[in-house]
Image (cartoon, rainbow, N blue to C red; front, side, top):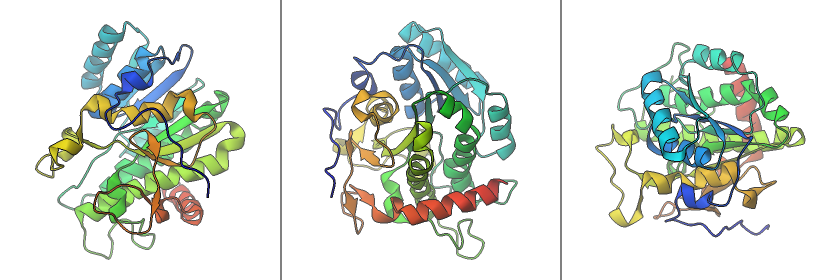
Length: 305
C-alpha cells in the first residue's frame, strides 16, 4: 500500500498560508460559486498569488461585488465574473462555448445541500445531484480542450465528509423509485464528485490534466440554510479562510505536483475506511473505486447528451 500524502498544512491552516510562497502569475483559474462562502476565499487566495481568476457564478451582480472586493484586497485587477448556473445544462454549455483560452485551474466548488423536498431540473435530474455533480461534470468535460492546452492543469472537486452517508445509487440516482431523502441525495452527489476526480485523472493524465477531491470541513456558510445552521461542535469548525485551504492546496501547491485521483482532508490525503467512523474522517472505498468511476463517467455522458 502506498503511503498517504501529507503536507505541512492542517486543520487550522488558511488558504493564504498555503499559497504564501506560490507565484501563479500567468496562470488562469475558474472557481464555480466563487462569489460567496469558501468559493470567494479560494478565489481571493488564488488572486493573491497572482492568478487571473474568473468567478463563475449564478448571480452576476453579487459576483461583481465579490470580484471588486478581491481586487481591492489583493491588488490583482485580473478578477472577472462570468454567469454560470451549474444546475442548468444550457448555462453550462453557454459558458463552455464562450471560453477560448487555456485553463490551468478549475475549482468545482459551487453546491447546495439537504434540500428538504425533492426538486428536479428541466431534464428531470434530482437537483442536488445535478448541481453538485452533473453540472460540474458537463463543465469539466466541456473545458477539456482548454485544460489540455494549459499543459499541466488541475481540476479540484469540493466534496464532503457527507459522502460517507451514501454511494452513488446507479439504479436510481434521481429518486424515481425510492423515497427522497435529503441526506442521501447530498451524500451521493459528493461521492460522485470524488469519483469524477478518479476518472479525470485516469482518462486525462496523458493530456497533463489531474484532478483531486477534498473535504473542506465544517464552515458556517449559506450551504446550511436547509439544516438549521451548522451543528458541528465548535472545536471542529473552520473559518471560510480555513475551509478554502485544502482547495487551494490541490489547485496550486507545488507539493502536489503530479498527484491525481485522491481525496484530501485538512491538508493531507485521507485514509480509506470500510465503514462510517464516528468522527467522519476518511474516504469510503466506494468513492475511489475505479469501476464505479468509469460507470459514472459513461452514464453521465449519456445524461448530458
